[in-house]
Length: 174
Image (cartoon, rainbow, N blue to C red; front, side, top):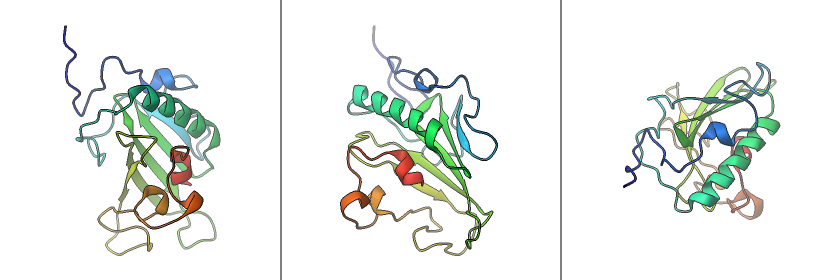
């Protein structure tokens, strides 16, 4: 018997599901309506990386890391940040951040799509900023979706500012 090839919409049959890796039950939000982590059945077609092929180079390390990422996101997201994972694409996450009070970004909603790299956690995730404005909102966020942050490897940095194998998605988000 042969294993069907991985397509953008399916994970390899031997892959554990996001839900089986999750600590909480079902797709319920872990926190209240002020932020939290949830799992949806399928990634939306609008996700920037939905149509990309994905096959982890080290599946065992990848799935172990995703399990730890989910636990961390479930327990440690600050209020005002919502993260969604997807049952059919364990490599994809969508993030919504509400702008903090008493800042120029107060009550603004900022959307990001992430894809964990095939070498994750050895390499940083890919990040796309979903821009709903025609001007540059922040020096690190571009209208075309580019996010310039040293932790993502898209800007220079040193020490804890750069991605290492022990970095995580929560660090990038906050």
